[in-house]
Length: 233
Image (cartoon, rainbow, N blue to C red):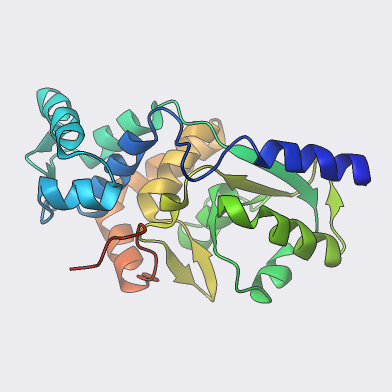
């Protein structure tokens, strides 16, 4: 266990909040656009939420407009934009565990998380069997998560639970279902597209009813996660 623990800590140290991987800010912009497909946000506001320069927002929007995916800040083709986002090369750190009672453990914690892929899809769309429980966590809270899961009896290594971390803005517009926190609908769809196989079929079904799922997302939004230094309007 000690050697496994050292290895996990080594993984964590390779990413910090002030060392964003290349493409992460565009990742944020895609997420923000797809949470507000009506285009009610200005470019300035998107830049503030993404914590980037307005010129980066403008350049990306210009590129997306050429492909007829957006018009201004309005999303003209949600499915096309989700597919485009899924091709963005984003790398995250992860650690796996075996813990059959993971959902009970989530009920006991106040740590921030956002369920994604199989478990999350089964809760909002009901197409996939929840064979794996994957959740995003904050990069600086891995030690707390490791301690929680081990305390609950988790075995470290391959299993049915995987923690992911790379950018805390992944919690933007997360929402709750039955007391569990789920990443925003567009993030979930993109993660399913990247997963491949039957997960892509589930993503396709979700994209067909994207507007309704986005409405569900907004209705149950946690609305407590804002990028540091950004005040909601």
